[in-house]
Image (cartoon, rainbow, N blue to C red):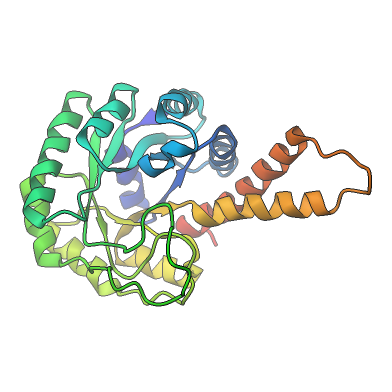
Length: 288
């Protein structure tokens, strides 16, 4: 069933858990995520990120995501992740997305506030909710980096006092905070500051905090983040990697002369992503 971000965050708050938010840049990942959520009977957020436009355009994936959410046996929020322009944000809303993230975190604070306020106003016309970001995780959502493993000096940790002003000025429904995570593959062990999350929650009166760069974080750190107040966890890179690894192993196991069919590779990829997503969901729901 299709629900809003507010509705799904209410479930998270009541249960004191986090809801997994999984990018679905193709039909295979969409099937894997919805299938995992239905098997575990857990609510889920499916996301389209603007940086994945090169994989499958939102014009193609968006309607599929909304249709899949409506047919699902569990609550599903369809969310735009890292919308970089207000025009793209509204494009997603017109398709029936129930939640959008406007990402102005790389802009000066005042400009981020003004654009986020506009995003909230636009979303209200469609009955949708808004997530914004304050601070910076460093790398792009796509996970691109220099591969050196060095600490990313472009990270800017979220200021809890500034977060209070930001939430009050913009009226957002969830806030992505920077507290030590990084988009993409972790090349060094993350150093997470859970006090940032706790103080943001205190200063803002309990706004749902969103954790970006969730792939590769330990189960113990996930649980600590959830206890601190994280209610939405974005997860994609390791799910995508699980599919690639599984397909590579499947291809390597083919007998000499045995044909490799794409349809078989697709099934291998879906099953690998589904199992990876199920483990993540169980962790976020404090089931594992």
